Image (cartoon, rainbow, N blue to C red; front, side, top):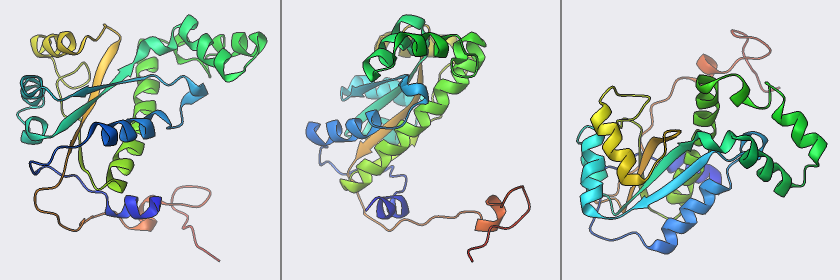
Length: 219
């Protein structure tokens, strides 16, 4: 059940020597691809990394986080802002079955097409979309019994001013200027399995009814 995966999922940072199979990696990626997306634009790219030298470079770019270099495999999650370009966006909608009039309406709508608002707004929408796919992948990994850690603290255009580090990572992964390494999923089997211990805010702290401050109650 999905709820069991949600409850039991945790960040795993210490891995055994057992490798994660390519078949399981593909299954995790397929879950990410199935995530919902704004107007189905799917502004993401996923790069599987197994090469140890490349894992070490990514670990350094992530501030030396050991789970990046020691993972069996990494999935580099790339926010692809080029997906909003009119030709690509239109092709996705056409494949989805939208007629030309509808496609033109969406492309011309500032509410539906953030690229009309500017690069910052496009980036915000793209990062939002990435969060859905990453969530799906972590849950699929949990279902497969594979440990996963989301590494968002990595040198990129969102977190760092270290142009050299950003550039070297982008070149290694073959990324264009409008493709940003959003985060890394480190995958591996947990070295010493343990139960998930989660600390969360109380329900009433984060849930309201109709407006902030009104409690939601089941009647």
